[in-house]
Length: 285
Length: 336
Image (cartoon, rainbow over all chains, first blue to last red; front, top):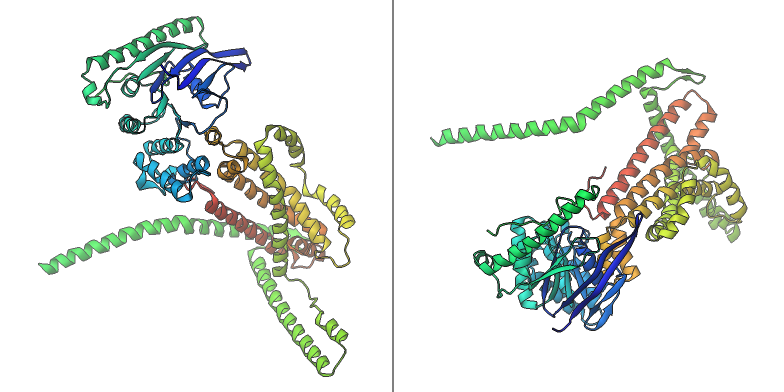
């Protein structure tokens, strides 16, 4: 297997008031180019920390991240991030939000006209061409997330990092966004790491699902290869036994971890898991 | 049949008109009538209360006396303007005559430089005050906004400056004034001064009191930029300047304006006190002179000044609010 992106035995320890806290311990993962990988696990297991280390927003205390044979230590547009809460500048229009990124990344390599067209092209890709002059406050949550994705795609990243991109959306919008993302992924063949709490989303979108053990000292628990043909159709897959098998596997893994966590919590009363962040299992309708 | 139809239509439109009128009237009552009634009630209370207070300068002025003095001050202003015009007309005639008589250049020049030296009217003093407060406020903002941005962006600098700011913030303008007066007298020595010393002293005192709310609020605004947005700028590798201009400044503008509004409000209050003591010919000096004057009209004239000071302060605040609404990106924010 070729190693396009290598997360090499990454560990991270934060100093806290109660002494050092090791959040990740030897997380190891290799990604092929064009692969779509989901990270799933219970809340607090350090999924976001993995993503932030790959993005360069956090520094690993052990191990490191290697992209195309080069170690990465700082953030950069080659690893674009789609944040959970869209993170658009509220004072810039939809167009200007994407244009800011385009101008920054391509200020030397492309002319003004090319940058303008590239901005429009990426907004077209996420079907947001009708709202170029609107401010983020004037569009819906799903639209904001689309713009966030357009901004990330416009950077032409080597790796696209998505931190629960659809977590804050209602389920209908989420369905649309997942379909859009699959369509874009088919066209552009990006390498993607996505964090999700949603089992169906993980199975539907991913080539591989990385299931992480509970933190602290979280590591890769199990890896599930999703061998389903693309393009995938959620309605057809609902009846598909392979799909349902994968789904059951993820649910089983999470359930086992959940039991472990409860046993641990019985001993350790003050570390209660938050209910809202737990992975959700929903029926495919 | 058609007649009946028109009739129904007419009745319907009338009804509709009445309905909308009713809604409008309700709005009008709430918007204008209620404050008006409250004002009337306040005037009555003032009038009745004022009559109970006897001072060495006569009865405390009620609304009627104050209104009379307002008119008197306006008449004085207009009379003064007439005198001024007359003076310059006379002067022009003398110059023309001197030129016709072939008097030496030097003498004509001297005539031309003569200025009208009449008494400053109430209206003139209002403008003096506005210019002084504007000078102090702009000076303070020019210092406070950059400083606020810098200490907001840098945690070390923030901890360095914060104690000093907290210490100087509650200092009364009256404590600064003697120091400022002495420093201005010592430093600003010029044969042909552009500004009078009293003006500089007042403006600088205003500056010293205007600085703090703007610095603190700007710093808090800058430090409170959404962490996700900072992460976006890191991913994009924005330079320091781009980051400041595109992300930090816009997101701290609401807080910055909160600081500026507070500063201007404080500045206007401070100015009156500063003008009283520094004898800058503005509203503060007007109040002080009337107090020293001690005629039977003085208290009423001071009340006119009090109302003018309140009204101008209110207008200044509204002006800042409108500016904030124009500049702010968050059009949904409720500003009041």
